[in-house]
Structures are given as C-alpha cells and as structure tokens.
Length: 491
Image (tube, rainbow, N blue to C red; front, side, top):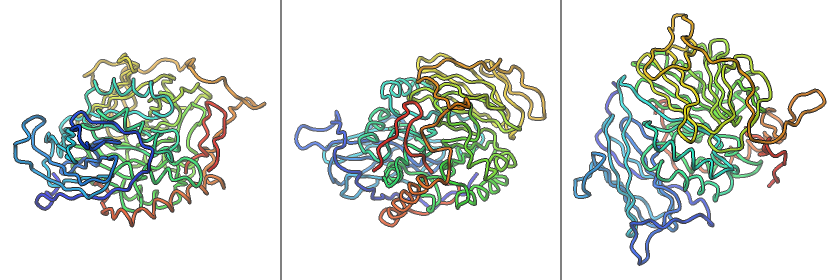
C-alpha cells in the first residue's frame, strides 16, 4: 500500500482556449434561456487511486463547478466529498485529490444552467484482478472509429489506453472536437491514457503537439510536457513513451530511471510499455529505428517488461522477439494497411479494424482481440515476469504458459499475409515498399524542424498553464500517409 496523502485537497487548473470554429453540441440538460454550450467533454483524466481530473471545453468563458459524490448512483442532495470551483474560462481542468482507492464516484459539472454528469472508479492499490481496453489509430474514418467505440462501450475495462494518431492533423481544432464528439459518452466515465502519435505532432511549424498537451492531463514529469509518463493501476505499471523522440534525450534518461525504480516497487507484478511507433512490425512503416539505435528493446527486456504495445501500422500484429513480447493495435479506424515484409518474431498478422481487452491477475494475463462487430480475432494467455511466450487460441480462464520456460500451450498458426482493404503496393525497382512519410528517418532536417517548433510551443505553454510537477508514478513524420501517397501541405 502506498502512503496516504494529506487530507482532501481539491483544486482547479486553468486550461487554454483551443480556438474558434469548434463543434458545439447542446446538452440535453440546459435550459432554453442563455444555456451554456459544450464543445467537448466532460471527460475523465489523470485517474489514479486517490485523485481524478474532469476536463471540459465550453463555448464561452464561464465559471464552472465540479461536485463529486461517493457511489455510482444516487441523488444530487447527498453531501459531496469534493467540490471544485473553476475559473471564468472556456477550458476547464478540474482536479480533486484525497479520494479513496478502488471506489466508485459520480460527478456533476455545473456552468450557467448546464448540468453534465459522469462516473469513474479510482484505481486499486492492491493486487486484485484488473482489466483495460486498448486501441489506436482512430483518425480519418469517423464511421469506422465510431463502430470501434460502440463495441468498446459494451466491453468491460476499468480504463482505456490509446496508442496514438487519434486525429489526422493535430493542428486542427475541428479534428480534435470530432474525436471527442465520437468518444463523448465513453470518456465521460472511463479515463483515457494516450500515447502521442506522429499525426498529433503534425506538420513542421504547426502547434499540433501543443493542442495535444492541452487536450490531455497525464501524470508525467514537467519536462515531458505530456509526451511521456508512467502510471500505476493495481499491480501493473505502464510506461507511455513518445516514439518520435530520438531517444538521445531526457526521455531515455527518464525511462532508465523509471524502469530501475519499478524493479524495486512494492507489489508490482506487471510492466507494460506503450508507444505509437514500436520496435517491430510487418507493416509498411516497419520497426522504429530510433528505438533500435538507442537499444530501447534491450532496456525493456532487461527490466522484464511484459508486453510492448504500439500502433502506427494500421493492422493487428502479435509477436515475440528475443523474449520480448509485442503487439501492434492500429485498427481503430484509420485506413488499413497490407503486409509489406516478414518481421522476424511475428506470430499473427491481420489487417482489420479491432481493439484489445487485457485482463490481469497477479501472475497471469489474457489478451483478447475483438473486431467492431464483437467477433473474436484471437485470445492469448501470457505470464508475467517478461518471459514465457504466448499461449493462444485458448478459452477464457485457461492458465498461461509457464514463466520458467515451458512452451506455449497452443500457438498461432502459420503467418500467411492477409488481404486487406487499402491501396495497391507501391514498390521501388528493388521490391521494397516506397514510403511517402519520413517517420522512419528520425533526425532528418524536416523532422527536427517540426520537433523543435513543437517543443518550443509546448514549453512556452508550461509557464502559462502552471502545471504541477509530478513524480514517476503519478519526432513526428512529415504528416503524409502511406495509404494515399500524397504529401501534405506545409504550413
């Protein structure tokens, strides 16, 4: 058990206005006369065992209040356990501390006649079974994205993890508003922990990374500016990375320190890495060269990370390389990709829309991959301790393979390429895929220009936002898309 913090403290942090031209949705609870309007939210962020944030974007600058009551249901007349008053601003980031672990709460947001309700359940601090849902690459196809969200809403999971590329162009406020409109009901009651993708960073000289940082609140160090962070949920710790860094920077030093600290963390049974562009892939992007140059896979393996989750290639792929298990979940709505290569260690590949549900006990995990219609793609058991392989095509409740070296009980079959919707292969005379994006060339002049500009913009916002510094617990491509072969306009 972690030490209890000081008595209940509730506070509000002023966000920043994201710009005009936003999508406005009238809430059903608002009166006819001068009703406040909701641009996005409310949605739960930075949820831990003893704190929660509720974020909201209004159509105008208004004072806002948040009331939190114990229990998932009940009357508004119950005494609130926390009351937070927000500033006169369109952007509200309302934070309550001093909550109880593994406890359900309901919240009420008020603003000039507006009433918005939601619920959340705080993280446990013990080793009870937990579950979460993971998905990513939702951009470009709102209908496919919405289909995924509808099925996730019917799937149990205590929180959500997104592997990035939530929007096509992170510099456009209307795309962010579209994302939050599709996920509105889902996010009002389940916290989303995001990983930044190349499309969030967007084009050189854009403010995509700044808009991403304004949209989310995560428990990361101040210098990370929302781009990398770690959080704990029960017996599991997650290391969420900015895959588009060159990893010759503060992020790698932070990761080394955080992994070392987790080695001695009491009660910790699981370690997961989450990032947008992962180390291995059979898709058109392939593995992330920056990770290999910085020997990040070796670092994760040495600290017994159980699974590396990523996206970027719009496919489902599962594998194991030199004892490091990995999964690509890039089927959240973006155009599907074909298979371009045979990645060593790949065990299953399918180009299909999908999402993941992960269930954990203290010693065993179960990965279930589902399509938008709820049909099962595959189910795989795995042990903790960073070793032991996959045991796939198993029924729910079947024990995973032994962590002491036993072979998986049932392994996936041959890895035949799967025909998929999408563009025809584009190959150079040598037969390798021709890429229209520069995301595999980390450190190139265009990319570094974009990174420098985005970093400067985000760093400038840190002073204005006055975000609190949090402890360890608590560079993009040129924006083009290999599915269309079109270079996006530089701004």
